[in-house]
Length: 334
Ligand code: NAP
Ligand code: G4F
Image (cartoon, rainbow, N blue to C red; front, side, top):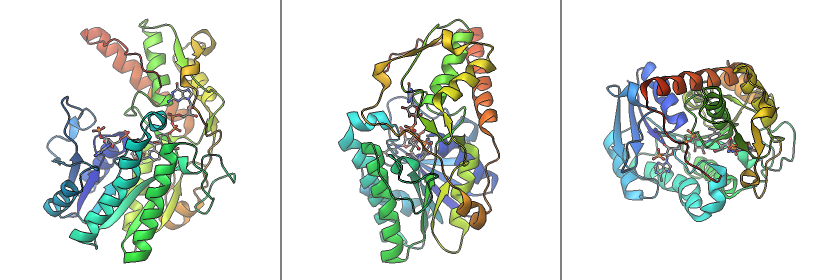
């Protein structure tokens, strides 16, 4: 039985990766940070199948202790401040988590056991103002947010530890991936949740920013499979993980409202509060290397992804109404 430690296990990808590794008969540990309110909703179904251990990417000592206690074969570093707009409001903290946090994890591995295999959650946000279409592993980076800059640091540090110390450190350059477990602040889930609430009469308008931005959207369940595949290779390397298709936010909106039998033009309001200081206009990845070397292919199409997110939120909102558990929508300015 192999052992894995996942940082960021409470997040979208962490929960899908935990599902995947439990299914593969791994002993799974998840690193969580202390919180005054419970935030384990994505993991409840795994309560007797994984173990949680306290630690924080800001606290080097806690990472060393966690790795010593779990004795993992593989570490998946998914923890990060991952919301792009927050990176302009909290650029220093974003650098601490998302950039220097990678250094702390890699150093902890190097000190405790450099044979541990390491996965770094790099991002297509590093391509930013893209210098090539589609984006490949060797496309130069031009990040457009403090988040993108921090991810570029983590990416090159991973390459550097591989080259400096011969560590089995791989970096997945993942394009946007979504699911019913996506955080409510990201545009896809904001849309699917908004559609469900409008359909159920809980709100009438959905405030959004730039509808022209284009993203290469895939399903998170497909993408965590690629993360695991990278660590099974004899040689560590970097891989673009993407569908190769790009769609605008407007296309996502139109499909989501149609799925619920609504006309998006009746409900969507363009709100300057959601326009970013610098935008990433177009992302589309070329996953050829991952297809050839890992044998990885996405299985869920864009249309299936939108439909499954809307259906899941419709079911969730209807259930909340039936059980009287509906929560007021808090106003968030980004
Ligand atoms: P997510 O849902 O926002 O989850 C982020 C995770 O990081 C949460 O578990 C969070 O814990 C944890 N975390 C944040 N700061 C931490 C700290 N200081 N110490 C320990 N844990 C901390 O993100 P995701 O969508 O699953 O993405 C996973 C990773 O892939 C992230 O690194 C993200 O930047 C990267 N990525 C995501 C995408 C995408 O489209 N989803 C694409 C490319 C790359 P709390 O629950 O305590 O906040
Ligand atoms: O869903 P988003 O917030 O995701 P974004 O910025 O592309 O970042 C996500 O994907 C990255 C991979 O490329 C990850 F590394 C990162 O951690 C995160 O998971 O925004 C997508 C697009 C943007 O162009 C944004 O301007 O949607 C546009 N948008 C339009 N209206 C909106 C809104 N985004 C949000 N969050 N909220 C809006 O109201």
